[in-house]
Image 1 (cartoon, one colour):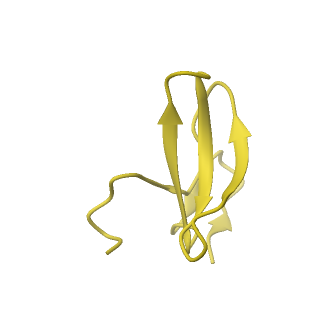
Image 2: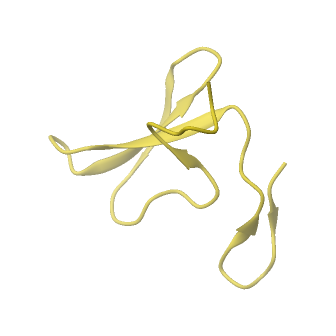
Length: 59
């Protein structure tokens, strides 16, 4: 589990989630790695502590 430091960043990454940028809607989408379902969308900056796709750490 990722933990907040209080300094606008996290230590560790959130497990079983990844994110990607959708150019059509200009949003970052968060995906559940187990089910593949889209969990959330966000405009502006990417999600903190969530791995970006494609990511070599996740197989």
